[in-house]
Length: 279
Image (cartoon, rainbow, N blue to C red; front, top):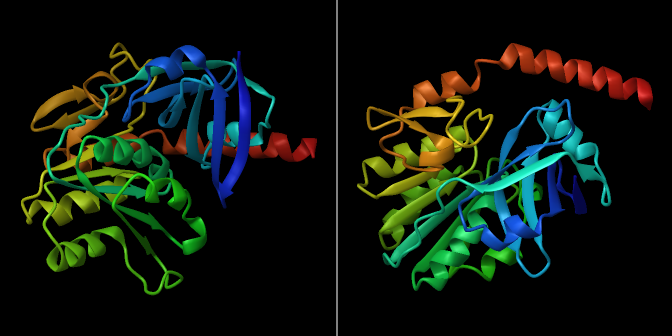
């Protein structure tokens, strides 16, 4: 059992959880993830590590409440426990000095891009971070990112942040008015990362995305997380989560992510009904 040291609502529908896991915290590197199982009946889901504190012995993750498992996670409080917590998993982000790096985060991916931006800055790069939310009130951790990069840019899907614009639109306009970055790294939902890949491909900018398909064991044994990259089958858990965005077969990835959608909806309905009767 792993103790929850902190559980808070960051912004509407986004939660932050800090979990006591000293052995994982000692070894976690930017870009890696953990697999969480809330209780003995729960599924195993991957979550990107947003912060690792070896001194405190804690791992922080940020997630969106969208299904049964994240609903269970959201119902927990500081001081509660989760059943299983495994990691660090995946290949760490490739951190090196390349020049100018554009770090892009959307939704829960804002947390995931933060340690990568910090590491890239420490490696001697010029780091520009762009974060996206449907509204300004859904943006978070600006203070952490400002301390980890040279410039922070925010975009929103409505006009709450000066004007309406999505990341893919911002990239094209930003690059045309500024220096061309040597590398783009994107962490967030599949839709956003795909749009980033399409926006940078014609510009000839190397782009890395962090994929998080359906996953079970996280060690390459189950094959659930297979993705097609450059015409070759890869396992996101052991070959990733970093992949060349311009080589990802996005249509196949999306199709695999929704293959259990009907079952997920049924599970969520049962979970919500059960919890409603307990209120």
